[in-house]
Image (cartoon, rainbow, N blue to C red; front, side, top):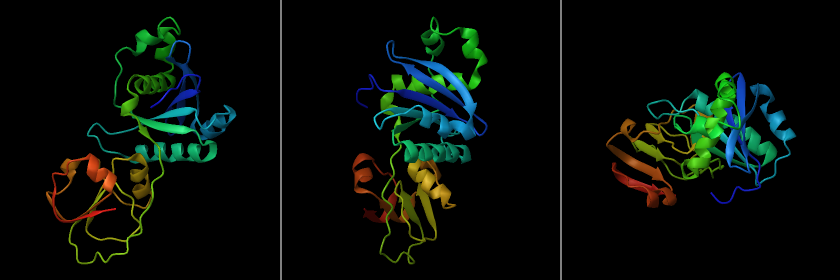
Length: 230
C-alpha cells in the first residue's frame, strides 16, 4: 500500500440518504469520526477538502452475507467513480462485513463512547477506515479496466464463462464472474448479472475468457473445452 504518512485519508460509509465520514488522525494513526452529510452533497464536500492525487478515500463496499455484490454495491461504486473522475485521488474499497474488535478502545480518550454510539453513520465510517489501516492488503483499489472488443464468432459456444474481465461483445449463454468492483459496476450498468462466488458457476464451460494476469494468479478448478487468455 505504501506510506500514507502526511497524506489526507478519509473513510466513507455511503448510504442512499446519508454518508458518514471519518478522518485519519495522523499523529496517533487513529481514525476518528468527522461528520455526517447528505449523500447528494458528498462530492461537493470532498471537493472542498482540496485533496491531492496522492490522498486517499476509503469507501465501504456493501456485500451481502453470502458474499455477493448487490444494488447497494453498485451505488457505492458508482459514487466512488464520480469522486475519482472529479478529484483524481486514490480510492479503495473495504468489505463492510469485516469487523474490528478494537474499534472502541482505539477511539476511547479521543472521543467519548456515547458520541461514537450516537453518531451511527460516522461510527460506520470509522470502522471502515479502521479496517483499512489495520489490513490495507485486503482493500481493493478502484481502477478503470480496459474493455475488450473481441473479434471472434461466439455463436457456436453453448456455455461461456467471463472471468473478471470486461468485454463489449454481445454474447448468449454466458456467465460472469466479477470480483473486481469496477468490473462488477461495468456489467451491472449494462444490465448483466454477475457473481463473486465460484459456487454459483457450472462445473464445465465450452469457453472461459480470462486475462493472462488473472490466469497466473488463480487456480481454476473449472473444466472447459477452450481457454481464451487476453
